[in-house]
Picture 1 (tube, rainbow, N blue to C red):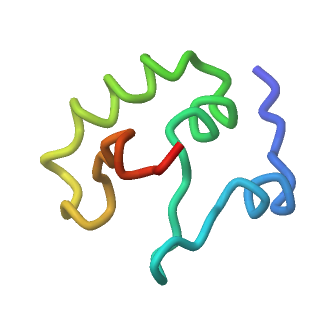
Picture 2 (spheres, helix red, strand yellow):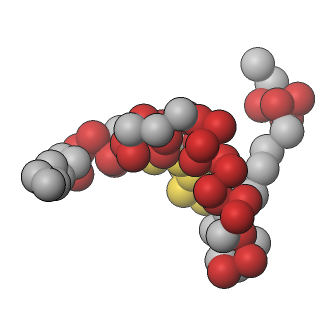
Length: 66
């Protein structure tokens, strides 16, 4: 199986700084891993106990001011 590395510039473009915190949208993370967004959210929830809450959190859509 051939593993292709993702250029660092591609990852950096998907990291945003909001209120001094670096964040990545779930859809961008899913895109990098080439899976559906639902799948990445499901996996994140499954392993959430292994991460400090500061590393993985949900932001309600209403707080995004879209």
